Structures are given as structure tokens and as C-alpha cells.
Length: 102
Ligand code: FES
Image (cartoon, rainbow, N blue to C red):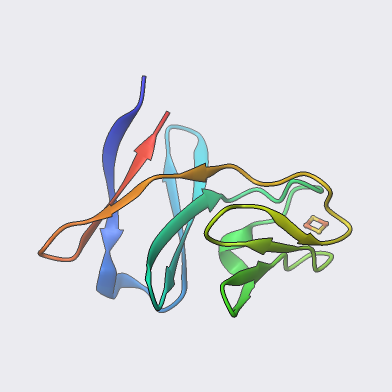
């Protein structure tokens, strides 16, 4: 069952933020149009996407450079071939960021 969990505050990070909750890792990204959340684990091999470079709404995996759309999780460049999972986000008026975990 899905539930909302507070992950961090909007001022806690600049671009990418790693959030751990119940043995799962979430990569939270701040873009010009909002806050997005992906599974932190690259779909190619294990590598933390929260540490990847973000450019024009895409995150580059720090290990082999696969590119994922931060908004949709879609793969935009190899070697990964599978998308990464996305999670709903919500930013409260006070700047607290919540993600919907499953
Ligand atoms: S682990 Fe991400 S591209 Fe290889």
C-alpha cells in the first residue's frame, strides 16, 4: 500500500538527494519545474543515480553514463535499456518534500 513519507526539505540540497526508507533508496531531484523522484538504483547495474550529473532534465548514471529522464524515468541513452521506477512527490508550503513510497 502506498503512503506519503517526508524525505527532506527543499533547501537541504541543490540538485540531487539520496533518501533511504525501509531498505530502499530514492533519488530526489530538483528541476526548474518541480521536484521528482526516481529509484536510486540504475537499471543497468548498481549505481546511485542521486550522485549523477543532471543536465536539461536528465540524470547521467555516474558509473557508465546511461541517461534517464528525471521526470519519467525513461532511458535516453545506453548502456541501460530499462527505465527506472518513478515515485510521486509533493512539496508542502513550508518546503518539506514528501514522496509516495510503496
Ligand atoms: S550502472 Fe548505470 S549505466 Fe551502468
